[in-house]
Image 1 (cartoon, rainbow, N blue to C red):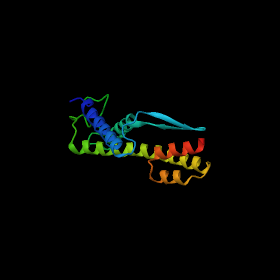
Image 2: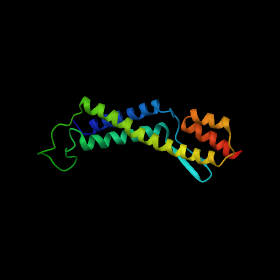
Image 3: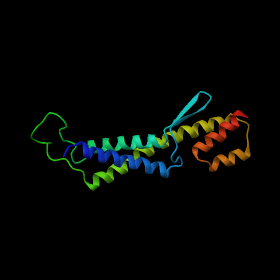
Image 4: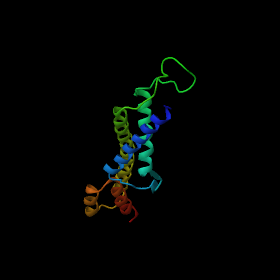
Length: 153
């Protein structure tokens, strides 16, 4: 079996983890885009970014710690590392988990930037009790939009 088939399975499993993260985060299936307030530009990677990072994280994890992390990819015809390559259930489960974790990290970093920018904009704006109550229960993207509207008024 070629090593490409197991790599494909692991990358796909990581992509599934990225999709799961998109489902459980408040961002859902948004398209990648950037939002801007003043000089601050925040890139929101959307579901595509979650899938890409989940796939990459799963591949890196499997490549470093998987059953065939020592497999020779090029150059050797016999000896250690040239045995038949396979993928176990634990490798797939680990890839999905790492995909979720990697995509979750990206989501948290974007949310942190959105909330920091929203806090700065709200602090620089005229005080509004109604808007402050909306921000308390808002998602990070909604809080950013509320604060942006407050800042522009």
